[in-house]
Image (cartoon, rainbow, N blue to C red):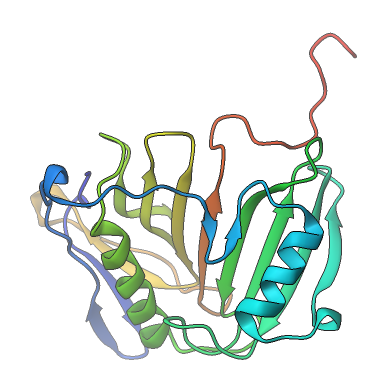
Length: 219
């Protein structure tokens, strides 16, 4: 597991909030995590199967599940908005993505913060809880990342790969943070231009996703 380079701190309102530090645990003492889907929705399911699973898992009506498509990737989507989904704060949007060729479930995205404004402290707390949860499992060697800034206001709280092809990514966006670098030099990110949100991705095949591509030599 790669730890964050120096202490990463998230700033909200007028005070500095200590962010996250995860100690490296011995992988052999932890249960292995296999990325198989999200809750009862398993990778490889068809749209009708996933629809039935959503209704059963969340107690929503079939009419509450919206269909959609991603014209760039050639995938189809099922989207459900939930009033609450622990441990995230407030409403959540869950998107189920189906492959362009197989027409079966290949990815699930869970987003908190898209439908309602959530304060940064609350969403950071939820992200920290999720990161600690995933860090409690063994992942593919040298394929785990924790607390990695990837943009002005974006941090990968956790990213892990299982022994097969699956992956999990937990990203927080819309926050202001500081990184204490070598030599005690502190770098501060600019003020965010959008509200904070938390994004969790479950991916069946991190190397060869079932999305539309153009074969080489065609043009």
